[in-house]
Each structure stands twice: as structure tokens, then as C-alpha cells.
Length: 235
Image (cartoon, rainbow, N blue to C red; front, side, top):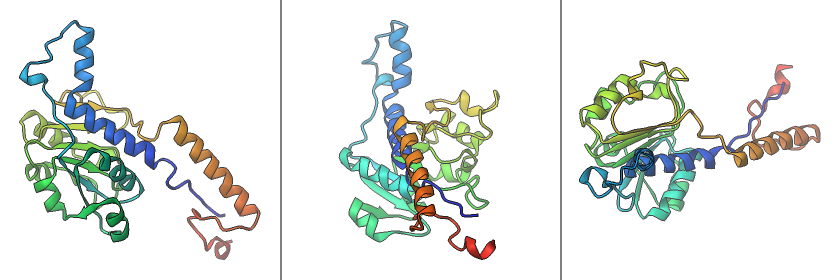
């Protein structure tokens, strides 16, 4: 059996949500919405003053399709983008004006850290107490990848104790999060129900790509996103 996927069809949608979470955390957009609805107009208090992306250093962990789309979007914000990946693509990095960085450099230099790696035995729990302790106190963490990458208890403790400044989370373990998940009550968080890829446009693109894969396969054409090109040998 030949197996194909719709690689890349969801990248822009997830990257856009990452940008949205960055803005929402930096500017406290959800909290401000609640306050306006409650007739609270105290927007000039110091606690209501947010931050801009412009001039910030954004550290991206993982440099695949989603990260490349995110880097392209961030170029319009005039910020510095650094990234780490085990399989570094220097050509793409130069095209997108992204600097290679070690994990240690991202922890030490990034004002915003966005995670875009798969869940594997080596990446699960990578964002833990030790990781967070090496980040800047003004840093915010964005996770639109997989919930298992982050130790929820450690992140909540870091947020509540000022180790880092904020977090935007689209993924949890398990999903939906259990009522006692500490991130549900942690300070300075913006939470989403794993909707990174959920746009009308991305669903249409994925469906069209899947249909084209089927048509190309039966027409004897090359299927670019086939996952097991040696399938014939396994029949």
C-alpha cells in the first residue's frame, strides 16, 4: 500500500496562530477584551502596558515548514530571528534572514521562543524547570507543536514565579487538559484548544493536495509526498 500525506498544507495556518499568540501575550489582548466587557477602561496603568515584537529576538526551535512560514511572517515586524535545528537548512536560513543558534543561545538571547519540533523520546519534556531557568525573565514561550514537549507543572511554576514573563499554548497533554492542569490557572497565559491548523483555507488546501496525490498515483505520475516510495517491494 502506498501512503501519502499533505505535507506543508497546514504550515501557514499554524505559523499564523503562533504570531497571533505572540501578539496576544505581549499585548494581553484576551484580558483586555474581558476588561472592556466589564467596563474596565484603566488602560493606561503600568500593568496594562504591553510590549511590541519590533526589535525583539525571536528564537525558533525546529526549522521545518512551519518555522520557515513563521520566519517569513516575522520579517515584517523588524525583529531578529534565530533558530535551531538538528538538520540545518542554510539556504533557507539565508533566504529568510534567519541566524543559526544553539539551544543555549536561544535560551540566553530570545525574548520570544516558539517551539516547532515533533514529539519524540528525545524532545518530550524538553521545556522543563532547567530549560526555563536559563531563559530571560522577560521571555515568552509559544507552543503550537505538541503538549508533551513541555512539562506543564514546570512551566506554570515559572510563570507564577516570574522566571519567564508569559506563554501562549495551543497544545496540551492530555487533550483536552484535565481540570487540575496548572497551566489553566497560571499567570500571563493565552490558551487555545489545538486549533493551529484549523482554518477553512488550510482544510481546502489539504483536501486538494490529498486528491491530487490520488490522481497522480493512478495516472502513474510522481507523488511528491509519498512516504514509502518502495511500497511495491513490500506487496
